[in-house]
Image 1 (cartoon, rainbow, N blue to C red):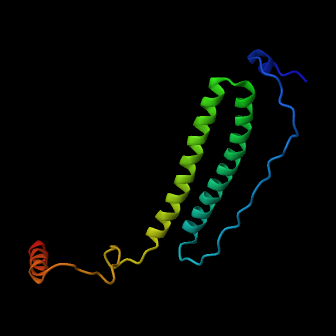
Image 2: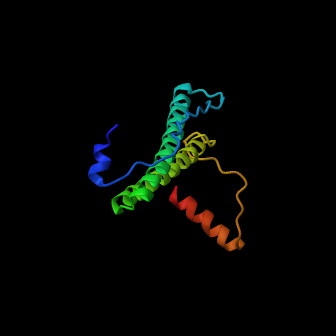
Image 3: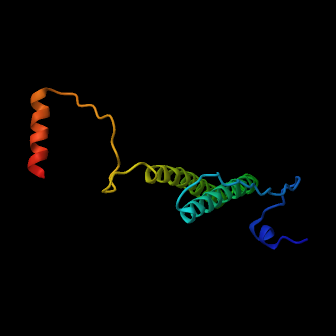
Length: 138
């Protein structure tokens, strides 16, 4: 089998065993919610993030082998870009979970987050001034 691209770049084939990528299935968490469509969308997006990150990790390992074999600066640049993309995908996955947690936080009638057990550290005069300012704002 001819490798025209490899020959034109002056690359020799890497000898080693070929490992097939395994598809990882992450079953969706069973959470009872009123809005099932939103939960389904969240799980679908989460599963897609997992698949992209897993396949990107495998691609990174393969590209790192190519970069080591060729010692070409462009190959290392591609590795660097792929690493940044994977880090960004991981950050997006974490922020998606944080956003979901924030969206599910209890809210009052106006849709504002509920705050329980506030603690004021200060003098009585400062507290009275804050309460006075709050009344003036209303």
